[in-house]
Amino acid sequence: MKTIKIITYSITLILLSAFGLQAQNAAKRHHLVTNVDLGSGNLYTDAVASTLGGLLNSAMHTNVFGSYYLWSPMTIEANHKELDIEHFKFNGLTAENLFRDVQCGIELGYQTYSPSSYINFGITGVAQYRQNQFKLLDMNDVGYLKHNIQRVLMGGNLFFIVGKMANSSHGNNFWRTKFEVGARYSYAFKYNDPYKLGNDFIKNGLVSHFAIVFTGKTIFEDIGLFADFNHFSLFDDSFDTSASTPVIPNGMKMKMWTIGLCWKVNFQQSGERL
Image (cartoon, rainbow, N blue to C red):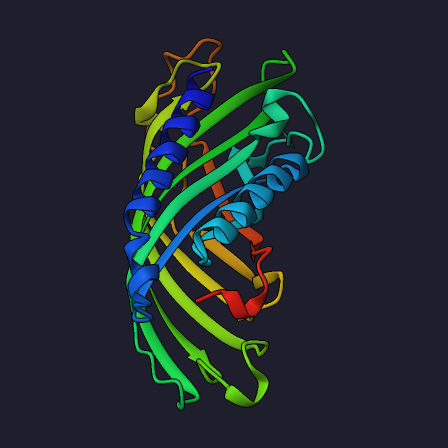
């Protein structure tokens, strides 16, 4: 329940921030970049988020709200042996499956806007909430035990766009390609685990971000791929785990990265959008 509350509060705050920034649409400030994203590793959660985002984009005459499907491969080692991991189902309907991997965030920044140029640039700041849930096979033969890691990621992106920002000969139905690189600092503020190790067992560190997005004015405005790579072990291998119950060995390491699909939905006709 605590996880659901945190996600609900985060989404509410993000929505309020987006509505507050809606003044950009009235003024048609093409230089201002505003993105609000909500995604998960569950098809049903993504379907709801995508539909909600499309309705909000249509109602607000904008393309602020996006969605994505994400997957977080990981490896966990102890005593130089890789442990078995069980991921929750991408099509399950229980709370654990619906919120197995969740991410929401807001992105604000500036971009050049030269309609006649084939190249434009931009820079943005990013704030995200991310949750990862999984089950790990216990080394004391008690079965698979649930782990839940919640983090805040803060950082920024640099991007450049190839393709004209406007094309009168094709109206608004044209496509551009955005190439994006970035970095975030990952801060873990909550770790629920069966061994009662607590937050100190989770390390903080640098996460690199890469994305390629195709942008147009169809019902799917943005369609792309992204990848985030942790440059550190999420588990602190120097942490003394001798006090854990049951006892687990020292030196556990966890490597994780996230890959996914991203998109934006808008049910408006292209000519009605900014």
